[in-house]
Length: 105
Image 1 (tube, helix red, strand yellow):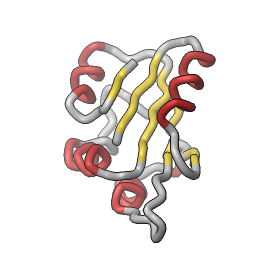
Image 2 (spheres, helix red, strand yellow):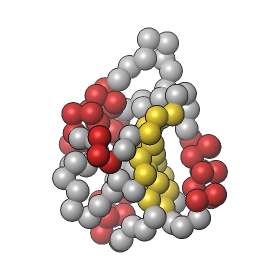
Image 3 (tube, one colour):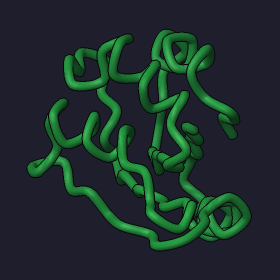
């Protein structure tokens, strides 16, 4: 599942995160991120059916190849919750992610 929260109000974004985040919440930094890691998190199945949350901060860029459609599809279908916290998103970027995200606020 993918959730995207954007805007300048950090308090509102954190409130939204607390509503959807479940299980262990992990932060994945931009420098450590690659497609193999994303697929690994998307394919992860817990022994006890626990749902985990992966948090990204300012990870989406307009020309980002890491979040290709096949990777976004895996993330969308995953039990793992992926939350993106972004400052600003342009309309073309929102349009790209709209079909994959559970919610964009």
